[in-house]
Length: 293
Length: 291
Ligand SMILES: Nc1ncnc2c1ncn2[C@@H]1O[C@H](COP(=O)(O)OP(=O)(O)O)[C@@H](O)[C@H]1O
Ligand SMILES: [Mg+2]
Image 1 (cartoon, each protein chain N blue to C red):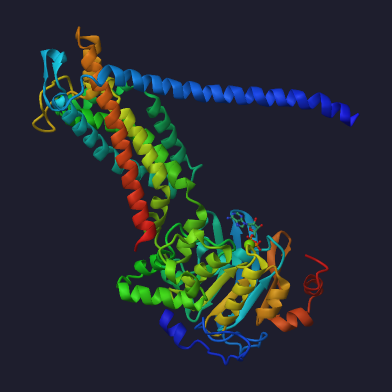
Image 2 (image 1 turned 45 degrees about the vertical axis):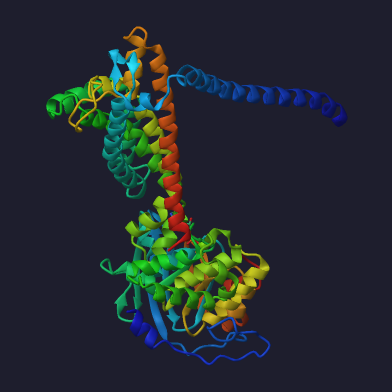
């Protein structure tokens, strides 16, 4: 699954910003502004409903996630954004009483199929949580842990991947001398970048990011935001953010969720610029202009 | 008005604080003092008798003279049997309770209730049970094996409950993040949750070992009184605590050797605890620092 998806991932031209020092990165230069990508649906969500026990959390969500783009999900707390993300990597399986209905497909694969290999799915669809969750292990082992499960055990191969992904997230120069130090000793921003590196090590095609910057200070948040921009094109990113300015800066597509009749619904979905500049719904307009939310 | 209240409350508050400080400190001092008294009493009473010969020679004249060599060996063997027989099932049950059942589930609640009742059962009852089940029903007779297995049953509740709490104290974030990385539950358990819970597991193990080493009542009817060097696990063997009990209660003139044996017991306990902690630290560091 991983191979075919990665092979035909859309690659994009990056606009080079000569001011930026890109030597520490391998993901290519920072992109200026959110260009709109050629819509090629990678994940199609149709009539998705999720309930926790009797309590509905999401009702009738239909949208397409486009290949290589950054899709931002915005909306007030409790409208089901986290729930939506956890459907896409089947983390909902871990929550007792959680029922998922509807159709979610990636290519020809039915992501909701009960017999789906969820471990393979979760390697293809990485997830970054709001609070960085470094494991109480060394920096190196944080990255290697999931690779070992992947049957990669050759020392040289492991070392190569560790250096590669740490470089990808711009952390290599900061930690290369202390790879054996405990990861929880890193700063919050470094921890979050390590978590991203950890996810990248599995070579996912898709990254789900649940408010990845909201637990970080503004500087660290800026660094992580830059990093997310660099992921564009190489990865399909779905990011939940409460920071509307951030969504506007980085996203190609935006989806606006709102709680209606006690369940989260998708009010509007479209190109990021359209959602922010000429929304079709009054509610969206009120939310993005800060009048409601 | 506010000034008046401030004045009237402040001195009282300070006295109260001082009183609380005093009570807390004296309680702490009392406990520490008691411990030091106990240690020094054992030390003073036992240290003069202590020698290499005492540690290696067999007892003579019902223990009035001679040493405790065979008894140390028996104690070690009983303990080994008890640990080997209790740790794997305890860990398995704790994992089942903490990772594969919900805290409020009927299964979890009933298992926990049974364990708590078991933990409170007096050890003499375990002794009688061990005698009936291991010695007679399974035909193991008075033997180190019977004694060790009886102790294993006795410490099982403590081991399970502390291990379960240890596992539950590992944050759910770890479980979610591990699952999101495509790790299987068993891999997450092995590489992440067990190492995180290790301090609690070791603390539980040490509690269990402490209880097992101090046990007399459960052993008298199971591993027996025989103070000869055991040839195998199927031989009867006298545990240190049984020996101490026998010397003080049944043997006139055995007091001095009883104290020396008690000193050995305390030192052994400290050594075992120290070893367990070192091993746990090593294991944790191996997981954390190297590949
Ligand atoms: N594990 C859970 N069990 C029960 N209800 C939950 C659970 N997780 C979320 N919910 C409920 O589902 C709704 C959506 O939550 P969530 O997806 O976390 O929203 P958001 O991420 O947009 O803040 C909320 O009303 C929340 O209370
Ligand atoms: Mg959320």
